[in-house]
Length: 204
Ligand SMILES: C[S@@+](CC[C@H](N)C(=O)[O-])C[C@H]1O[C@@H](n2cnc3c(N)ncnc32)[C@H](O)[C@@H]1O
Image (cartoon, rainbow, N blue to C red; front, side, top):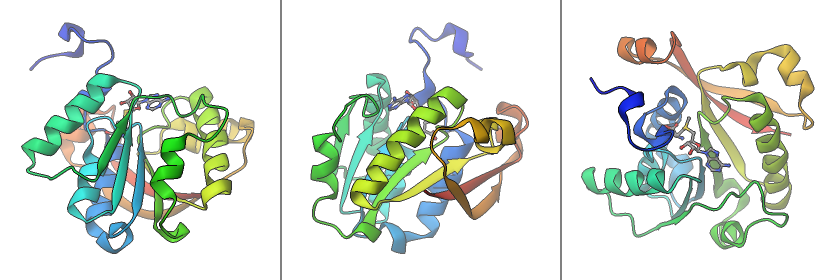
C-alpha cells in the first residue's frame, strides 16, 4: 500500500475519504429531501464526496471550495468516475475565510433560493482549534447574512469536543446532533481509532 511520504504532492488531503466526510455524505444520501433544490457550499471539499451526494440528490447548484487546486481536480475526476453530471457545479480555490466582504460567489450561489434550502457543508474540517476559531467566525458571518443551514460531519475531534478548547473560541455556537454512524473497521484502523462519526447542525 502506498504511504503519504512517497506522494510527490504536498499534503494530499483530497486523497482521503475522511470519517467526517463519510458521515456527512451518508447523511445527505439518506436525506435527499434536504438536498433537493438546494444551493450548496461545500467548504474544504477535498475528494468531493459530499458534493457528489448533492449532485445525486438533485441539488440546484453547488459551489465546491478547496484551497488546494489538486483537490478540486481530484473531485472533478471523482465526479466523472461516478458518472455524475456536474453541470450545476462551480469551483473555487479562493480562501473564503480571508476576504473582508462575503465572497461574490457566495451571493451568486444563494441569491434565489429560500434560507431553508441554503446549505453550507463542512466535512472533517475541525482538525485544528486555531483554524476552527477562524472558521466559526466566518460561519457566523455567512449565517447572519444568508440564514444558511450549517451541516458538519465530524468524528468528534478535540476542537469540537474538549471543553477547554470550546470555551476558548471567540464565537459561541451550539452543535445539534442529527445522526451518528458507526465507522467500518478499516476506517477506524486508518484514522487513529475513531469508531463513530456524526453529523451536527451548527447554530449561533
Ligand atoms: C480533512 S480534509 C476534508 C476533506 C473532505 N471534506 C472530506 O471530508 O473528505 C480538509 C480539506 O480542507 C481543505 N482546506 C484547508 N483549509 C481550507 C480553507 N481555508 N479553505 C478551503 N479549504 C480548505 C484542505 O485542502 C482539505 O482538502
